[in-house]
Length: 330
Image (cartoon, rainbow, N blue to C red; front, side):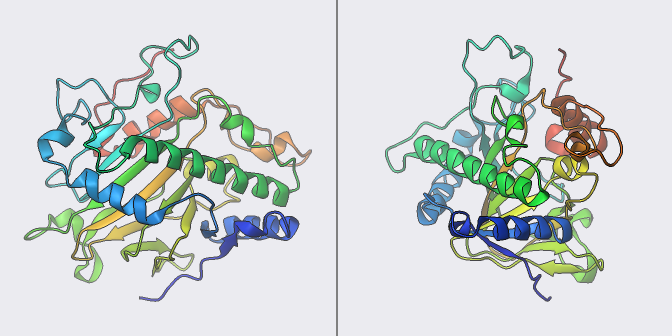
């Protein structure tokens, strides 16, 4: 398995070589859709790993107190919280996820809009500052994503803040920590792929706007290149991996590439931490976004993010963890 020559975006150059860096960001998004992001300030990767180990080392009954309602009927959270490994599914992982909560008195959010449900948290025992650390991590990677989008806008020749309105008020972004336990015994047939390899996450494209991911020192992540070959994405110390989601690619009429990727079983416990940047529920993510800034190309067609995402994850892709989500009425 060869390695993909993923471009490295060094954010320390954003002040000294901003124009050139912006061009490199756009070139990478147009041709690969995967990037390494170096020199993100404020991330303690060692502590992040300890946070993952602490949470997934909790007793199952403790984690199940935080699980979504479709896994435990007496719970109230529908969209975020904990999700366990589901036997028989090719996706072998457990995870915990949360969002930036909106104020309880925000009257602009419908009570039945579960994309804005209040995050749930485990009771802490003083070993780690779980909630405080992760909420701070959310803000760091959120701001990192905004700087990348400012660079992308600059490289596209439009105003640097052209994307910011999508995320300035109540973004639907999700921060997740994940644990991939190795398969025990024979995996289900739908997890076995070419050459007898086994996945813990089947091939897919992310549905969000963009993803920032840290994989610690673990192999297993693979990307489908333009020649239709699966290429390994090796871990890079103290760096994030960025990829484009379908939302962003679709807005850009495919100019930016949403790349198919998967995770292989590596025979040991594997941890990773993705941040899924998503616009606010009512943000316009319609196709032909660039037509709003240029006089060329087909007309922009407005479309709200929230309804589009719900239809995709529930009715098109049919992710097992979202199959039972209720529809959201205005």
